[in-house]
Image (tube, rainbow, N blue to C red; front, side):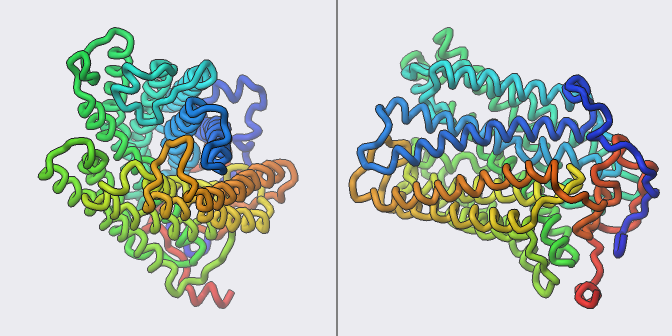
Length: 544
């Protein structure tokens, strides 16, 4: 591999992991990390379209000020379904369990993860959690939103709250198991010569994500368990009518859920850090700064939950502290954006689909991050909280950011995963449609929130209709953009051209194996002899 900083054994022709057993049993009982990642990919894609369908109905209802759906209760259950499915069964697990599962051993130069059976068990737990959630949502739904604030969820709600929180409780164990597997694999299974500072940034980002998952998820699990106990047995924990404190629920919930925001976005940072150098033909600018920015974000993420509670009754002094801490997150996030732009500067940039998604990610995440400064400021947050401004900010970070990164990574490693190339032109078209549709959907919501339209309302004042119609039109375009990859990536599985081992001329151990990789990943143990991202100088690439 030209310009590579690694030396590897030459892989002998072997059967790929896709053809090593084709029965249903060989898939359902596999312990191969690559097959498990595909099982996860199919599962989260299913949930993505369920959550997306609910979002389409929400935007359909908001076309008219009085609402289109028959009742506010139906609307409440729809946005709760959308939030529960999208947050807990797509955004949190998406990149770690699909791309992470597939790539961690390949990037480490290992045969598999440290605990292959635990990896399979994680998928079964995730499926079980998903089935319980679907049962709850189909049997009658839940109307509390994805945050389950008490005492609404513990006393007043008529929905299937217990079943839903049990589903999330089970999904949490799946996340913890995956996080432990990644941490131990990164510590124990690195190829000879791969020091921590020779690891790709994607592995660093998954390492930071896994630490958050292992430390924060048990807090969420216990909180939801207490909520279920209170609802079933009337034990006074959160409900003030029986001696509980609803603020305690919010503190415990956001202690997990704010770090969970970084569980969703940190792996996306890792994906972008792999793609920008590859399509700029340049080394990653400021590698160590990017690495430590990930660690800094993981640490600070545990200290900022209080900014969700500025209007909930916290003291002024604690609110000031949480406001300052929230601003601190912007520093490592800005370092990453600066380094990605520095990497592209004077690079030989190729605008293939993964790069278009990555550039879209930088733009959308930057808007989401900058608008986060408004909700971190005490005075602004008092006006903006519980309005559509918060909805727009959250979606710019999570959907514009994380989903763009997921699509960028999926397109980047698709040839490695499947051994097939997708039609590049359709990849570029989809990236542009998604970018346009996303901005048309959520940019008007910043104005709606600034003007005072509250979120989660079935109907609204007539003066907000124009912006709501614009947002719903954008959602239609966005839906087309999200359906396109399903069509052309599915087509490529059967008709796409065969992919070479390294179609992008990228660095990294995963590109030294055939596409798709053999079951054993490597015929001989690879040896790493230099830092990552050793791309040839830009001038040499220009002259090729």
